[in-house]
Image (cartoon, rainbow, N blue to C red):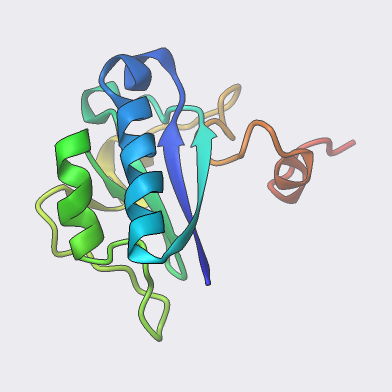
Length: 136
């Protein structure tokens, strides 16, 4: 089974170590025998929580942040990326922020121009279409 993990590629996340987090995630997942797909997306604008790592689950994306390179092993030990039989992701980590869409700061916003930033893989046209892009 492959797990999708989202990590921002914005300059704010990169300046705070997102590239190191991604590299450590990739290396550690391989050594654990797990297959993950890391999507480098745009930031939701929660710059104080960058680098924010989101894990896809049946309930939606679960956010963790800020996650630094030293935090990766504790997250992987939790198997935070591996949903259980019901598709739930482990959320009992101190860095867990809960469902991304339920973070209070994001819930209070009405996004217009940047509605899809952070939710769409910027390098995948089909992902963009599946989330309402290119509508007449």
